[in-house]
Length: 191
Length: 298
Image 1: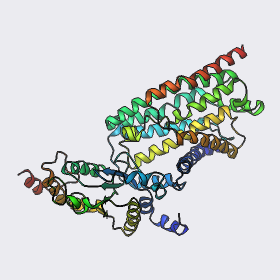
Image 2 (image 1 turned 30 degrees about the vertical axis):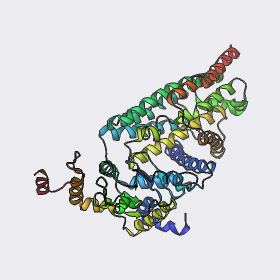
Image 3 (image 1 turned 90 degrees about the vertical axis):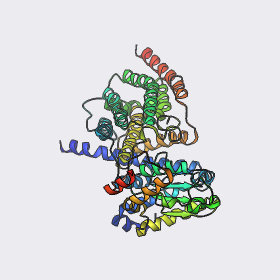
Image 4 (image 1 turned 45 degrees about the vertical axis):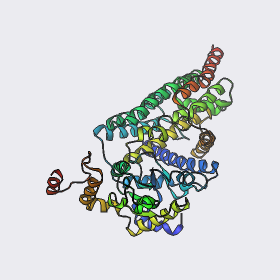
């Protein structure tokens, strides 16, 4: 740890601790699973940045979605994201979550993941190198410092439109809304 | 009176600091054994600060109460353990009280997890109870041997007797019990190769699966206490305690690092392999130690 960071720790302990303790839950949908193990093990040791994989969304605050997102997977992704505790950060890994990638005309994949859950950062490429995860993490640090990694706040504020998008993709959702949505929207949804 | 109150306040804090330091050191040394650079030693503290600032959701009244109960149980055990010259409750209790109160911590976690009603938690708790069935048998033999050999149940008197006669780990019949205790130490602490109950890859870290935010921070603190208790008991019973705090912690550090070497390179047992192991070699050694001690005494 840098010596000149000590004053920052006293000024904003929550922000600094969020930066240096990113417990990640990896959602490896189809591809991208092979890039993650070298990152977390001896080859590129992500633990020195405080990034470790955890097994459950309750303990995590970094959500890494690698590879294409099919409609069925989207359901699991939304449920996992909503189970995480705030503050939480999301990173899309690979071209497919950004804009569909090579599945741009597929009938069964989601083209823009950002429509369904808020994404704080993207790693473009097919596939990106494992080092790209570190670049993403350092960029995420900058974003957290500036208060720009506010995906969870955007999700709370615009939950109505996110929920509408989710229902357009998945049909009726079998879980209740995470945040209260106003009554006339509820009525419109029931109709 | 004032010193006693000071000791009662100070000793859990000291145990917490040492336990958290051990957690950080474990991650660093494990990383070095894997040829990685590893996180900073204060990484558990950073994690805990983050967890305390995070929002969390309670799953009910017992969910809150159970974790506090387990934490309180751990603190009570720490108060009964002498380390250095600090022993707040030296006149009362002894090994039997420690044996009973050590059960409160896992019981609290089980109660807390039961409220959350996650299937992974039930699997984790049942594995934890089976594992404790495995290590309680040799542990009871070991403690019986120590109590028979020194003819006392007071842990302070055991420490004092060792100051004059030397460590019990290098005395004849008790070395078997000491070895047996060291073999079951990872099972008592619930770390690899005996982390069946909290296996992240199999059952999503078992009883911890619904903990997040401050609940996970409290569970980490409880784990730090458990780490301290398991090793401090070994140092007190078999390495002769210590005259001052510093040498006590140096002894704890040596035992901890030795255990860590096993932890870092061995994979996880399955539950039936763990019980098979625990009921074979450590039980055999402990039972042999008990028989020899009884034969010498009579």
